[in-house]
Image 1 (cartoon, rainbow, N blue to C red):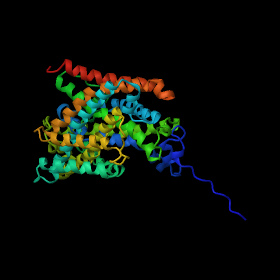
Image 2: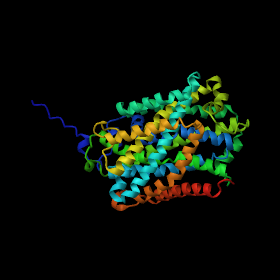
Image 3: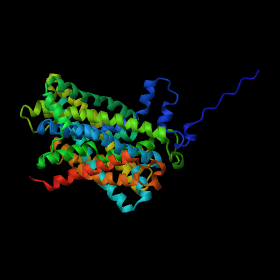
Image 4: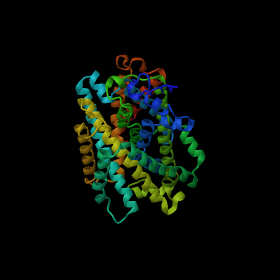
Length: 449
């Protein structure tokens, strides 16, 4: 008796993205509900982890040391704002099958796209340089005899080598776990015995001051929390996920499903919640320790580590160093790669971390040059914490421009089809754009006051 023919398994590459999304594919054959959930997590959780880069950590620590609990209210407010704009960016990548810059190039005047991409590349190079310097300062905590300046070039070279010759998924997987050490700030907050009534009050009731130093900190927090590079990275990684399934042709990647958008939103919400939880407790812990004890100015990584002493004792510097190194090593590749996606998309180059350097040379040259500029920035005599803070301020001014462009694109039915923004997403997106612009304008108006 002849054996019945087995049904041939259909390759995901042969099914267009409009019928089966990458997250749907990842969870299709997994019977375990817990693992099904984990397989949904991808670009959203990675961008959430990279958002707590040394620039973010430094900015939040400065905010807590300088103003105590006064900026805690930003953490719960920015979660839905961040989730909305990241989701909009994800939808652009899922629907068009292209990264954000490539979508802009196809639909808007070339000078506009190049201007936005160039500003992003400049901001990202400074941010990457600040993060590399922070990694060096953190390593100096572990090995005090080695000056941070001598560590900058080897760190830059190592991260560059990993990006060019290593698998980014492997790199991100390793260093993403290291960032969990930042949860030490969560534990430290309870050991520091804060005034919980004051904490709750500061969390639920926004504190507004029109003094320039407070407004600068506000812009810096918003700039490092809702960073322009995250938007370019999110859209690009949605495309990379489809490419990983073998969908090399643009026609295969165009379109998406309701389930895929729902899974993308869940992935992003988890990532943004993780990011802001870390932000909240860094501000709380530094406010309960450094601010209370009169140390209002943080100049070095060692200063930031002092906030962990009530919890970790002599291991405080080691914990902070591990978190900073992990967060920086994850963030620098994200920053330089998002620059390459932006510039490559603007000029129509072949782009992608999934591409071999020989097939996308200009994409990888942008990564190389961005890293070189970042490394060189560390020899200008700028203090690491100052560099991290001012990077966040620069992003705070750039973000409204990028967000406005994002909202115009995502509302264009010609580009997005049935995936244009709904009322809630549209309101949250424009509210985020307005909030970022208002904070930046207020800083200019009240500068020096």
